[in-house]
Length: 317
Image (tube, rainbow, N blue to C red; front, top):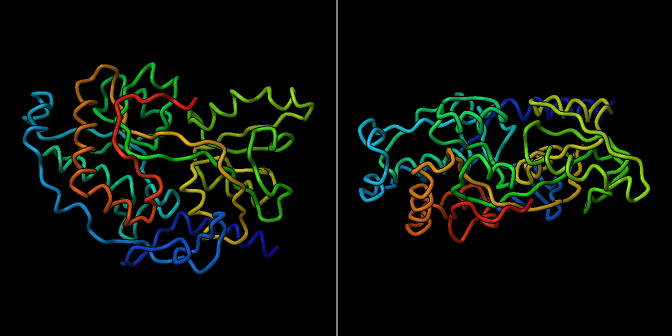
């Protein structure tokens, strides 16, 4: 019963959103052990301003499409982050304002380009099609670079993130290194994601190893996955490394099992859009002027920085 109540509590925590100003935090200060487990009381969410000093680069602005230069606006398709559910990528504070690494990055990018975002929220699986159709100029939702997506969109990369597993603390697995480690278990993840693609591509691995296949359930709401873990309907949560480590750091009743793979993540635009090369150069300008480093230091995730942004790098899968 105690574990059940704890997991209900974490569902409330990740959806509630709270935080005060803090300095740069170490893993120990944030309550994250070297294995991603909870090691201390979680620290406050950082709130320092790392964007307002960014100066627009006229040379980059002049490379934007004429209509964008005139309106000084780009339409961004993204998912709406609530509470602490998706931090450090994205969340919301007590006032409902969007906060997080991804939000700081896109705001710095807009400032460097001399534009503002007109933000439109959608579901994860609708952002890429919306970008393809021209509904959005740019899409952002922690999109890993994959072969399938490269067929329909172009990328401007901005960080590295991994694909990891989490279970209840009393789960029977202690570590996951390959998909054959999860054979016979029920896995929950988000639809239309790189996680779905990895699980589908590896579906035959268990049979090859002479083991029972894993089962996959898809949920658009991470809170539903947490409740599935709580009531035993789900054995494993497969999701982004950064967010899962953050989640585990706030909940001793959960266990981080390890990272399966690591991929480039980027903004997406319609195939052959003139925007992609400009976004790449703008991100590299943020790297050069130190803003990029300040953002990653603020969120204490310097280990997932890129040396440079790239246009359509080689996909991991």
